Image (cartoon, rainbow, N blue to C red; front, side, top):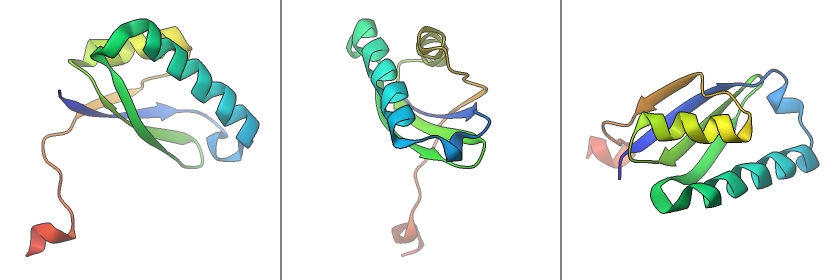
Length: 90
């Protein structure tokens, strides 16, 4: 299944409490369950005012639908074309 990186503009994201992240994560997981197995959240990175999420999904439209159901932005969705890491240099 294709992998996507989603950039979400969330002002103050880096200052949200653990309880706030837990509540938002639960809302996201519940939406995922409602959408079936066609979409999977792998993990997210939180910065000051943005959240970068990595998902598996059949297409970009599915990513946007999940965001709509959760009530969070999906400002930029990019399909992952290749994964590189330090081993790539060998």
